[in-house]
Length: 405
Ligand code: NIG
Ligand code: FE
Image (cartoon, rainbow, N blue to C red):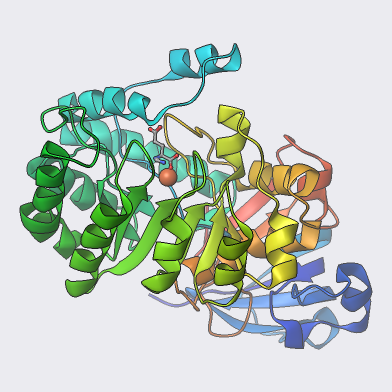
């Protein structure tokens, strides 16, 4: 197999490499970290980026040249939070919510039932169509969580199937307490027995397929102490730590995540000043999920407050059948700009380099020599159009590891 070198010339290149930014890009991006180059070119060689710079000084020996005059090129989106292995449908729950029903984690049980009833092949087919959907929308790296199996065999199955489509598999056996363990006593009694199962046989079965451990640390799901048990058990097995926290109300999720050195704490809808300062002083990425607030009618978190404090913010879809059934990172950007106080540049950074930080990856999320060749060509002259033209399909072409989709 010979590598094809492909040169993409374009009018606005977002590299996420501050060093790369030229004078015109500096003016366009303000003080952001986007590293914008104008009249730029990128050389792809096999699955990697080989060269980045001004079109005028680009290598001339490429096998193919893509002339994207008038269009912007951005790094592929890094969606660091999804729940894509599931069966069933909860559109009726969504419709009820739009006419006034509150969101509750209780709906998760219906997806657990449908997921357990689905065959491997049914789940696999659905997963493949989600992957196509993500790629078509410019997402080139994505994480997938388990959490709709909640038995040893079903969680193992979901982790294995997720591993067929991504390296970023997260074991979320501690999503909710399944009905066979739930005695309605919250953190007392039987739910501790479930946590023991998660930390024991279920972790043993899932850890070989997973890179991360996650827990839903929230009233109605798992208590702070239960969450700590789960995360520490995962960390002992070499898994990186992620947390679902502060989604439905204030809580300890953020503080626990920071204390345990989690790569990311996700949702962060309800944050105290102490939570914001703890995040700012830590390496834990704060991953905001605008699709959730959109689809549950909860208040949007204030992303500007986090950025101003110095926290690292990522945006992700949380694509799942309950709280956020969107896989569109462009929609997340549009909401974050319209309603959460991010500038278009900050929102794009959070959806690419921010997601990469949340997954502790330095090979994706930036267009720099040596990085994986994950690129999106926009049907627009500037990345700002992602927020400026909400709902419009602006993704012209996508390369995943150098391969045009
Ligand atoms: O990230 N927070 C918990 N889990 C999912 C929702 C799952 C569901 O409603 O099915 C979330 O929002
Ligand atoms: Fe989630």
